[in-house]
Amino acid sequence: MNRELTCIICPLGCNIKVRHENGAVLEVSGNTCPRGKTYAITECTTPMRTLTSSVRCKGGKLLSVKTDRPIPKEKWMEAMAIVNRQHPALPIAVGDVIIEDVFGANIVATKNID
Ligand code: SF4
View 1 (tube, rainbow, N blue to C red):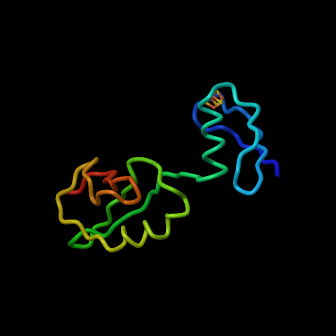
View 2: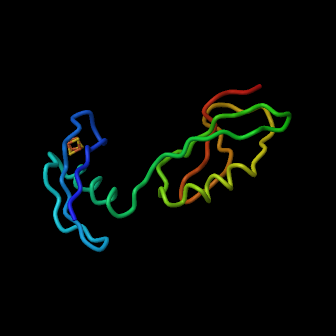
View 3: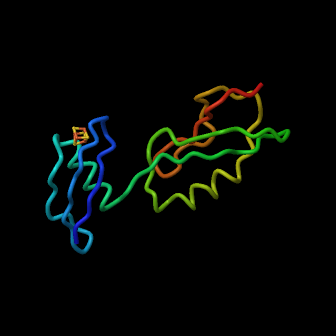
């Protein structure tokens, strides 16, 4: 099976072709550097994404949050269930860890709330 990807690691946006079969990557071409190959293999085997969401704080205000690194896309629903159970107390500052170690990433605040 063949797949074409646009590498998102740097602004060059190389067009990468991947030949894969039964979950195994057989060939990667079109990448200009090794980072593109790593990205393509990961994208075809264990796609990772940064999760963005919001949580309702104690008192009712909404706080936008995100993972501080990508997590496996297949774990998003479980991660969302964990995030939705949280009701952090205020005040909160950008970068505060709201939940530790959700599939290898921390959930952090992306705004300040007094
Ligand atoms: S393959 Fe390398 S040069 Fe091309 S977009 Fe990806 S990171 Fe950039």
